[in-house]
Amino acid sequence: MCCRPDARARASPRPARSATTPCGHAGLFGTARALARLGWLLWEEIEGAGRLGAGATLAELCRPDQEGRGPERALGFDRPAPEQSLTGRLLGRLGPRGAVGHWGFTGCSLWVDLDRQISIALCTNRTLPGRHRPEGVRALRPALHDAAIELLS
Image 1 (cartoon, helix red, strand yellow):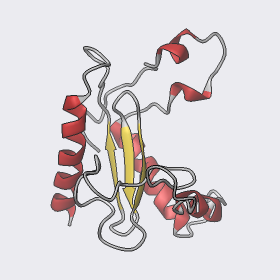
Image 2 (image 1 turned 45 degrees about the horizontal axis):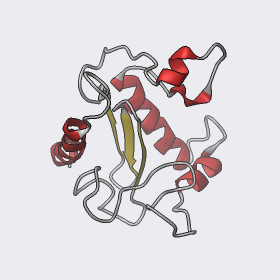
Image 3 (image 1 turned 45 degrees about the vertical axis):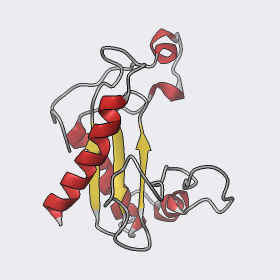
Image 4 (image 1 turned 90 degrees about the vertical axis):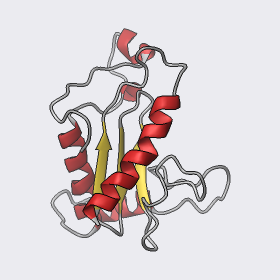
């Protein structure tokens, strides 16, 4: 959990804001605390908690995509790049399972280190003051992930 844990999020992608009907690309919105908790619940389900009955499906969505085209991804999530990853130098590097997560366009992201059992949520607004200057969030994300893992390890 990072930034203000009580911060409220709003739909930022312009197509989602202007849509007259519900649309799936608007994102998942909530507090950093709730987002980090979601990451922990996903990890628990993958480990067999059985509350949602979706552990096997979630585990499959976290499995690396074997196609080998483009950046490394899982079937349902992103995975850290092998080199110069925006996830930093530590996230997903402890054991064989690695990490899975999602980079939100607006700067909100959720990453779960499957071997360390750590969920990291970041809620920012990378589109303020303008969406064409991502340098700040590109520097913040790896620094935050590395600091969180160093603190919790």
